[in-house]
Length: 135
Image (cartoon, rainbow, N blue to C red; front, side):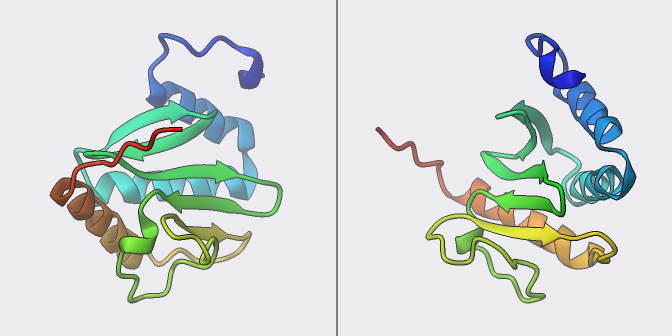
Protein backbone atom coordinates (compact mmCIF):
# COMPACT_ATOMS: atom_id res chain seq x y z
CA UNK A 1 0.00 0.00 0.00
CA UNK A 2 1.32 3.41 -0.96
CA UNK A 3 0.91 4.95 2.51
CA UNK A 4 3.69 2.75 3.91
CA UNK A 5 6.14 3.14 1.04
CA UNK A 6 9.02 5.61 1.18
CA UNK A 7 8.11 8.86 -0.60
CA UNK A 8 11.46 10.64 -0.71
CA UNK A 9 12.99 11.08 -4.13
CA UNK A 10 9.93 9.90 -6.05
CA UNK A 11 8.30 12.22 -8.57
CA UNK A 12 5.08 13.78 -7.31
CA UNK A 13 3.34 12.86 -10.57
CA UNK A 14 4.05 9.17 -9.88
CA UNK A 15 2.69 9.46 -6.34
CA UNK A 16 -0.46 11.15 -7.63
CA UNK A 17 -0.88 8.44 -10.28
CA UNK A 18 -0.60 5.84 -7.51
CA UNK A 19 -3.10 7.67 -5.31
CA UNK A 20 -5.63 7.77 -8.15
CA UNK A 21 -5.15 4.04 -8.78
CA UNK A 22 -5.31 3.26 -5.05
CA UNK A 23 -8.62 5.10 -4.71
CA UNK A 24 -10.21 3.51 -7.77
CA UNK A 25 -13.93 3.89 -8.39
CA UNK A 26 -15.62 7.24 -8.55
CA UNK A 27 -13.11 8.92 -6.21
CA UNK A 28 -10.15 7.92 -8.38
CA UNK A 29 -12.01 8.96 -11.53
CA UNK A 30 -12.96 12.31 -9.98
CA UNK A 31 -9.42 13.04 -8.80
CA UNK A 32 -8.06 12.11 -12.25
CA UNK A 33 -10.65 14.36 -13.91
CA UNK A 34 -9.88 17.42 -11.76
CA UNK A 35 -6.16 16.80 -12.23
CA UNK A 36 -6.63 16.86 -16.02
CA UNK A 37 -8.70 20.05 -15.81
CA UNK A 38 -6.06 21.75 -13.64
CA UNK A 39 -3.36 20.82 -16.18
CA UNK A 40 -5.52 22.12 -19.04
CA UNK A 41 -6.18 25.38 -17.22
CA UNK A 42 -2.51 25.90 -16.38
CA UNK A 43 -0.02 23.94 -18.50
CA UNK A 44 2.78 25.30 -16.26
CA UNK A 45 1.25 23.95 -13.05
CA UNK A 46 3.66 22.14 -10.74
CA UNK A 47 2.47 18.91 -9.17
CA UNK A 48 3.69 18.28 -5.65
CA UNK A 49 3.08 15.70 -2.94
CA UNK A 50 2.64 17.25 0.52
CA UNK A 51 0.73 16.15 3.59
CA UNK A 52 0.14 12.82 1.78
CA UNK A 53 -2.09 14.52 -0.81
CA UNK A 54 -1.67 15.95 -4.31
CA UNK A 55 -0.86 19.65 -4.37
CA UNK A 56 -0.93 21.86 -7.46
CA UNK A 57 1.16 25.02 -7.41
CA UNK A 58 2.06 27.98 -9.56
CA UNK A 59 3.80 30.88 -7.79
CA UNK A 60 2.45 29.32 -4.59
CA UNK A 61 -0.11 26.66 -3.76
CA UNK A 62 -3.24 26.72 -5.91
CA UNK A 63 -5.12 23.80 -4.38
CA UNK A 64 -4.89 20.37 -2.81
CA UNK A 65 -6.85 17.28 -3.81
CA UNK A 66 -8.02 15.19 -0.88
CA UNK A 67 -10.20 12.08 -1.03
CA UNK A 68 -12.51 11.04 1.77
CA UNK A 69 -15.09 8.27 1.99
CA UNK A 70 -17.93 10.33 0.55
CA UNK A 71 -16.23 13.30 -1.09
CA UNK A 72 -13.29 14.45 -3.18
CA UNK A 73 -12.26 17.85 -1.83
CA UNK A 74 -10.34 20.54 -3.69
CA UNK A 75 -9.08 23.06 -1.15
CA UNK A 76 -7.90 26.35 -2.62
CA UNK A 77 -5.17 27.89 -0.47
CA UNK A 78 -6.31 31.47 -1.13
CA UNK A 79 -9.87 30.71 -2.17
CA UNK A 80 -11.47 33.44 -0.03
CA UNK A 81 -9.71 35.99 -2.25
CA UNK A 82 -11.05 34.53 -5.49
CA UNK A 83 -14.18 35.51 -7.37
CA UNK A 84 -16.42 32.47 -7.78
CA UNK A 85 -19.17 33.53 -10.18
CA UNK A 86 -20.25 29.92 -10.85
CA UNK A 87 -20.60 29.20 -7.12
CA UNK A 88 -18.25 26.20 -7.12
CA UNK A 89 -17.07 26.77 -3.55
CA UNK A 90 -19.40 24.80 -1.29
CA UNK A 91 -17.20 23.99 1.72
CA UNK A 92 -14.96 25.83 4.21
CA UNK A 93 -16.94 28.99 3.44
CA UNK A 94 -16.45 30.40 6.93
CA UNK A 95 -12.66 30.54 6.60
CA UNK A 96 -10.80 33.77 6.10
CA UNK A 97 -8.27 32.36 3.63
CA UNK A 98 -9.21 28.95 2.20
CA UNK A 99 -12.25 27.78 0.30
CA UNK A 100 -13.07 24.27 -0.88
CA UNK A 101 -15.12 22.41 -3.44
CA UNK A 102 -16.64 19.13 -2.25
CA UNK A 103 -17.46 16.76 -5.10
CA UNK A 104 -19.78 13.89 -4.22
CA UNK A 105 -20.35 10.68 -6.13
CA UNK A 106 -22.43 11.28 -9.25
CA UNK A 107 -21.97 15.05 -9.28
CA UNK A 108 -20.91 16.62 -12.55
CA UNK A 109 -17.89 18.91 -12.57
CA UNK A 110 -18.35 22.25 -14.32
CA UNK A 111 -15.11 22.02 -16.29
CA UNK A 112 -15.16 25.57 -17.63
CA UNK A 113 -15.88 27.08 -14.21
CA UNK A 114 -13.17 24.98 -12.52
CA UNK A 115 -10.59 25.96 -15.15
CA UNK A 116 -11.56 29.64 -14.71
CA UNK A 117 -11.09 29.29 -10.95
CA UNK A 118 -7.65 27.71 -11.46
CA UNK A 119 -6.64 30.53 -13.81
CA UNK A 120 -7.85 33.10 -11.27
CA UNK A 121 -5.80 31.38 -8.54
CA UNK A 122 -2.71 31.47 -10.77
CA UNK A 123 -3.28 35.16 -11.48
CA UNK A 124 -3.70 35.90 -7.76
CA UNK A 125 -0.56 33.97 -6.81
CA UNK A 126 1.41 35.65 -9.59
CA UNK A 127 0.28 39.15 -8.65
CA UNK A 128 1.02 39.05 -4.93
CA UNK A 129 3.92 37.57 -3.00
CA UNK A 130 3.21 34.57 -0.84
CA UNK A 131 2.90 35.47 2.83
CA UNK A 132 4.86 33.42 5.31
CA UNK A 133 3.44 33.18 8.79
CA UNK A 134 5.52 32.62 11.85
CA UNK A 135 4.34 30.29 14.58
